[in-house]
Figure: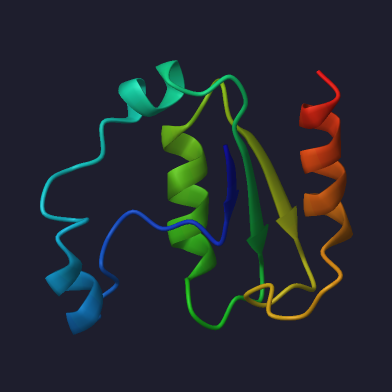
Length: 94
C-alpha cells in the first residue's frame, strides 16, 4: 500500500464527514496485517492535510510502515512524483 498525504479523520470537512469513512476508528492492526508493504509519502508544506495528521498516521502504522516526509512538497499536485514511481517499481520487482 502506498499512501500519499494520508489522514485518519474528516479534518472538519462536511463532505468527508458525510462519506462515512471516519465513523469508526481505523483498525490499524488489520491494515498492517493485510498489506505486504506500507509506504507513506507526506509533504511538510501540505496546504490540505496538516503534517501533524500525516505524522499521526505514520505512528499508527509502525513498525511496518515506512514514512517518507518531503520538506518542500505541498499536496503532491504536480508531477513528476519520482519517489512514488520508484516505490511502485520497487514493489513490482519483488
